[in-house]
Image 1 (cartoon, rainbow, N blue to C red):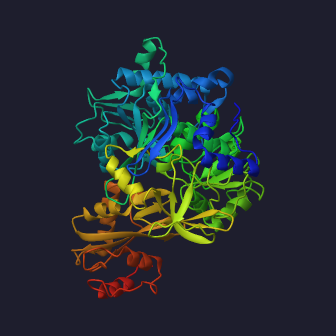
Image 2 (tube, rainbow, N blue to C red):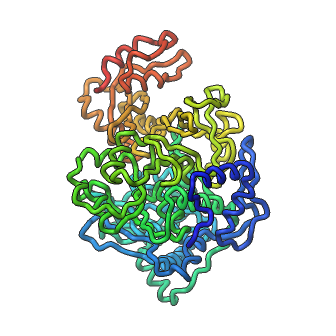
Image 3 (cartoon, one colour):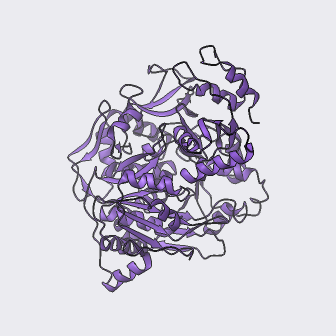
Amino acid sequence: MSYPYQIKTLDAYKKAYEESVNNPEKFWAAVAENFVWRKKWDKVLSWDFKDYNVKWFEGAKLNITENCLDRHLEKNGNTPAIIWESNNPEEPHRVLTYKELHFKVMQFANVLKNNGVKKGDRVCIYMSMIPELAIAVLACARIGAIHSVIFGGFSAKAIADRLDDAKAEFIVTSDGGYRGAKNIPLKSVIDDALVENKTVKRVIVFTRTRTPVSMIKGRDVWWEDEIKKVEAQGNPDFPAVEMDAEDILFILYTSGSTGKPKGVVHTTAGYMIWANYTFVNVFQYQQGQVHFCTADIGWITGHSYIVYGPLSAGATSLMFEGIPTYPDAGRFWDVVDKHKVNILYTAPTAIRSLMGFGLEYVNGKNLSSLQVLGSVGEPINEEAWQWLYKNIGKEKIPIVDTWWQTETGGIMISNLAGVTPQKPSYATLPLPGVQLVLVDEKGDEIKDSHVQGNLCIKAPWLGIIRTTYGDHERCKQTYFSTYKNLYFTGDGSYRDKDGNYRITGRVDDVLNVSGHRIGTAEVENAINMHAGVIESAVVGYPHDIKGQGIYAYVIFDNTHGDPNLSKQDIIQTVSRIIGAIAKPDKIQFVPGLPKTRSGKIMRRILRKIAEGDTNNLGDTSALLDPSVVDVIKEGKIK
């Protein structure tokens, strides 16, 4: 498969960028011609940021799975679509060609249909990183159902909230999952999540770990039994359901600055082209290369760069069930060596973790197949960048440092591998179609170089969020109300004299922990549910491995109990309500919080204390009780 829209030189990038800004309709219509449509569009783009309404390729009809599967069958049917590597290095890997994946997706689409799933229904998928997760995602897309994948580390309470918000009627899960040395009881977590649920009608359970599970008559069915029923029907074909360009493809829940997670909605056509275009250009993908994205499909990175981006490009995508340090810290490099991986796309957290183990786990591994390295999820610090460049890339391989969000659908700022210049710790330049602006606190644009400001975007790109599910007003308020007629990313950024962008981190009440966004309010709500907690405030602080750690200041009413035990109880509470990814790294019991006279917590002060910058707290005289700051400073946890 060729990509006429692949940018090959710096001059071509500049030309493409200019065209995409000056005439986006013409530019993206030309790119869109390379995809399969049931009906072409009437209009390429209509938009306004005031009431927030964006539509791409209005009037067009398509199905994304015809672009990810069917169109590759004739010429590339025997090409590996997915290579799967188990958590257990002793377990044989699996390879699914495009023909085999197409067959299995049609088969499971029939399973969904037999169980009552139809176009527009919401299907929650809660599985570990096995090929059946990708099969379930694509089967939903083929039938026109809306998939909502939930990361396997979330708790029953977090799942229940998401099921309720999406009004999901169907769940696809497995008995359990493997992650490093852990056996995760996925089905039993789903059972707990369904205790008070009123909408879910069917739970389809795949057998992975052979963990004993409860199967409720009339609600729960085994994946394997349902496949046998389809086979008994003679393995009927499943033609892809025709979708409108702006029909919802999936909902993906992400934390915000308020306690309730929000369902980010992505639609079909624009998202498909954006995932494909960014994949092909950022990684400079060539036919036959093996692309290894180490993310989980429960996050947007897995959606866009394990499933939809690579498969729509006819690429070979490697899925990994495990973690980089199991059974030892050489596992990533073993996988690269074994499968002759050409592109490795991973998180700075993983790199920093592996750095800590030294080079003994890298030495002796054949990494000569690598041609591109990539970083995703959070800004990569220069030390980690240099370690990756020198020790893994041997100072020859380009590193793409990608910045983007769940809401953007795909990569927004990045160098293009070997085509545009790279700069350590800089995401560098925006992709075609991405119109960035830096603004000050008042929303005035900062036009100079060597400047820092809040990062905004002034025009829609193909993968832009369409709404937050069931609450469009929240979408408008979250992204389009801070600065007039601008999408506010929530991130701060620095811009150098050459127009390169370096992301400096969140400027709102959202933490970025190991590349996962977690709202401070969501963590505070969970902490406050502990019986002994009166009030809490959560901030981020620099963490050597995770990038950002979670520091919790807690007013506790049981001062006579064992403080360490109480802290463990709070951590357990957060894990139960959200999941282990949100548990605080440090908990400091405090007598009070720094509040203004109107009752607002001054997080700026708490953030400075957590960071160890106690000499620059600013004016505290306006606080209701300034003396509380000295007590908090004194009790700071090292």
